[in-house]
Amino acid sequence: MSDHLDPAQLAAALADLPGWTSKGNAIERQFTITSFPDAIALLTRLAFQAEAVDHHPDFVLEYRRLTVRYWTHTAGGVTQKDVDAAHAADRLCAQYAVFEK
Image (cartoon, rainbow, N blue to C red):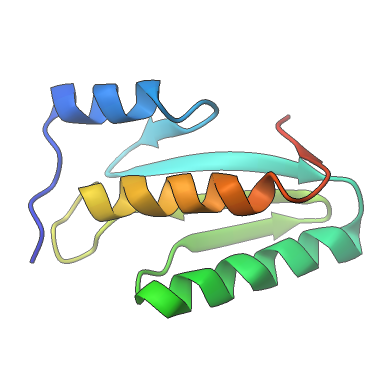
């Protein structure tokens, strides 16, 4: 089980993750993608990336808007694993024509 980040650690991590916000016991970011098929493709790639590291986010897809939410269930909050996953998601999303709304 991982220890969740304290408020100062979380603030420092978010300072290095533009577009990500703290919401409750999680971090999340919303992406708006150029088309619905591209949004589905991005979600699928993020799902495979998550499966590869056995750390799965919550997804909400609304047409071209994809919300990605990470938190470590066993820790009851955000851990370094979530921060690393958010960075990986940003790198993957940068390969697509995505822009934050």
